[in-house]
Length: 242
Length: 305
Image (cartoon, rainbow over all chains, first blue to last red; front, side, top):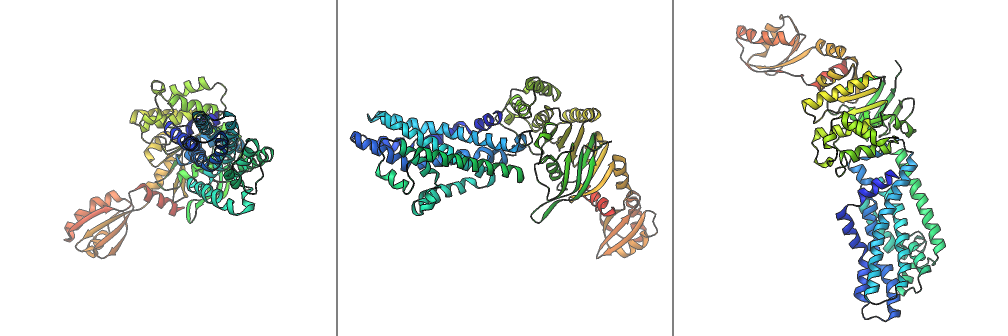
């Protein structure tokens, strides 16, 4: 726990948090700007559509934040202070991912709260926002499980992660049916779609072959977490720490 | 004396560059100096022993365990890394407390206060490390290493940046730890520094072991070796002929207007040279010892092995 708290505090630098909160607030702001004169039904479908599409900005915010979890320690030369401790590598890996998830959830909460404020500002029904929270939380878990190990493993992890979000998640997963099933954003969206009272056309299109289902989505995310944890543990055990 | 740290046929390479080559050593309690010029492989050896880097070949054992396979051994060993890296936003107290808690020290608050006193940082304990001088950072790093009361302490250039008073205090501290039966391995590229604190020296150059033994053994090996002197002069052949009978001269080699002299007693030869040059009617434009650097001394030791 000490390790997770340390890593979390390190990630939550004021300037970075403000910038990433702004990035994760994009869907809420877009919703606010586009829903002033919308009917209640339009507001509901727009909420899901905008979260589904503009929500990619949250994925990028989580990427920027979580790849730094161990990368900053490694690049900054402070990793020995963590690595040279009587802590099994799997525990270091687990607390690192926990720190990544906690920091991503902090940003997620900001993004979701912006969307809540936006719904309130346009006089919409607040009940639609609960499913929005599930989208942010699911994405925070899924992306952290991938980006924390990526940050440790790859020196240019931010670039690689951006490539993954933009090329794989946005373009390839939309074109290749098999790939869509492994897209973290679509898995998160499947949970959101299951819990949301109304799902707009754009959100449905983005989901593509992935069926809405909270249970299935949670299982997939759990599997991604296990794979991420295993990958980070093996990397910590086998690769040079400096 | 039982070895607490043993390294067997250890090599570490990064691509085509061999940083450590076939090193086999055993180190027991007391202070051991790891000596060598910059780039000799000291830091890599330290990192491999610390488990931070995987050996390309060979085995390591610290207190009977391989740190990479058994992280529990880190309860009994600590490293002070060479680079200045610290958590700049943490205060010295926070940094050391973090180290203590991660090392699972039961009473981490008392342990932190104790090591802060040992390294004389109590007055600055609540200042951020980012505002510390290099010497103060070194002391904070030493405190963070000492907080778990390790049996094996690896110190990579721990005196870098420390002022003379701090140096003396740190040297005394390392000696005390050695006297208490701890295994303290201190790397440095300064022989005089190592001489002040270590009973035993491991000299490295080009990734290989150059010499292992007491400081006296190393010093004597360095004194016994022939030295080279370069002379630029108007007539090197005539000067070489005049020199050859001089005591302390082992050989003379001609190369254009340059004369390379091999001497067993470089001081005597250097003193005799101007006299011989005047007597032979040769004018000298340069007289320079060729191999006075520590690196060349160590290279000689390697070649002599």
